[in-house]
Length: 388
Image (cartoon, rainbow, N blue to C red; front, side, top):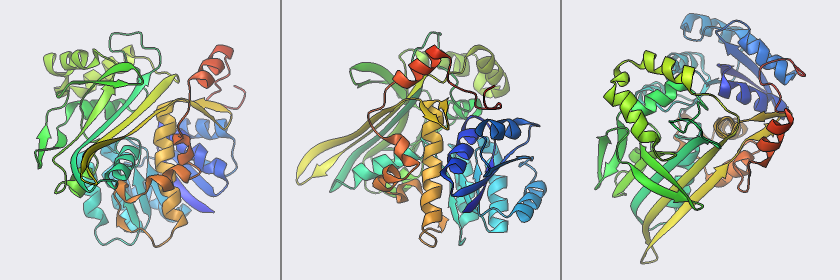
């Protein structure tokens, strides 16, 4: 039985805590700074191994006192990216394993520095992108004698778009704005360069449906560093329905809201609905030499909402929580195998997919479960009492 502290009881933290507690192998401390939020999630889950705390994790002294009193072996930060460095500092000081979901490049570099010489694991970027997409791409890379290009494409989309952005707020608004507004790492002609967000617009067809993809920040994770001297071109782009990029360029560049992100966040959260009926598209393409021939291999998957603990959870919740829970599970189940800074590509795709949490990435899902549960009004509640 492992004791784990989960910071943040939002969309993703709520499911992380439930998955770990439901497994029976984790005692979970779920903490949130807002009064009653963690308690509402714990009440909805109803697991004995799950305990709620009101805790401001941005205050390192308060977080340190909690850690010393309740003694978790690991901390998972599902907080906004700008909170993570302080949490990682406490983890280093107190000898905890550290995991986060950040897409922010600067935060990851700070965590890397804190991890230098550590005996415990520091594994940032454990979600979907960065995270699982790096693991999938890395598996394909191993099949090649030499590399030409590596393309990573991920999208979390509403199944039934009906607004001008053709989008729903399926995860952190701060994270979305950060991805759309910050410079993007790429490798172009063998050189690591920064490219502009919302540029590099391209068309992409998956299962007969046309989408668009464009540069966004952070999704490449540490792959560029790992394979920068072996690949000619490598990039990450976000998948959206066609027309979305043009609208976001207007908001962020034309109206200059990239320089007023607080206002942009208010606009998006007041006008773009949330939904449990989404789909996550994962696409990795690698080209290079195999046995003297120029070839391409792809990893393509669509993941739909699924039921956990009797309630419906969105595809982005499922994929993000399953990613970090599987990595945590592998690390804690293999003491001594990992230490210090751990990049996502150090985990094997087969190990993730065979893990009890990674199984949520299995191929073959459909939207029937979410459609039927919504039609019957049986999706359940993610942060209320059972039966509420």
